[in-house]
Amino acid sequence: MTDSPLPDIGPDKSLLLVDDDEPFLRRLAKAMEKRGFEIETAGSVVAGRAIATARPPAYAVVDLRLEDGNGLDVVEVLRERRPDCRIVVLTGYGAIATAVAAVKIGATDYLSKPADATDITNALLANGDALPPPPDNPMSADRVRWEHIQRVYELCDRNVSETARRLNMHRRTLQRILAKRSPR
Image 1 (cartoon, helix red, strand yellow):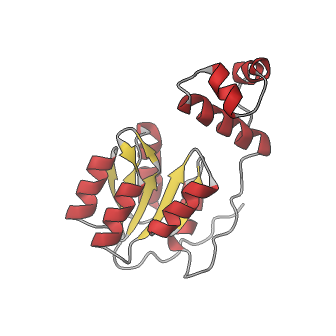
Image 2: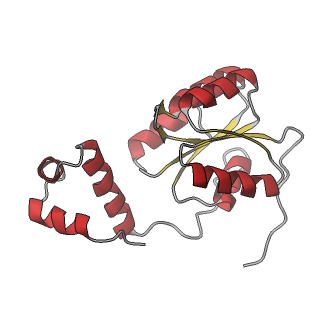
């Protein structure tokens, strides 16, 4: 794969990254800085809203699920303070309902983790209604299934019986799935 020239960011290169996964946030900040963005990071909804209010950026990448709340709260503030801000919402739990909610509130695009810096840059800089190219390494169907099961399991406070009931799955089958490693 050859490196293509970096797309034009524009005169305002400010980018707000909001994610509570500290190692991911540092790696993404470093990668986006190399692409020419001027980075500000936040690890919570409160910090993200404060930066969005004080210094609304031209671009933002916001994780949907943060420890202190929902990333869509940050998206709302960004839309109010800077309507032209291009916002990409990231999440490890991809679902159509949350994607629709993110876009309705004003997100430019919605990407499932693990998304790399190239996918995020393409989404941030996509022209108008043009969709960015599909990711080079999309999640496998097995991985998507596993992520969904893990999400429901966490939402049920790690209760196997309740998770199995909600997934319409036999409890022992669920236990075997949970005991295995995550698929790639």
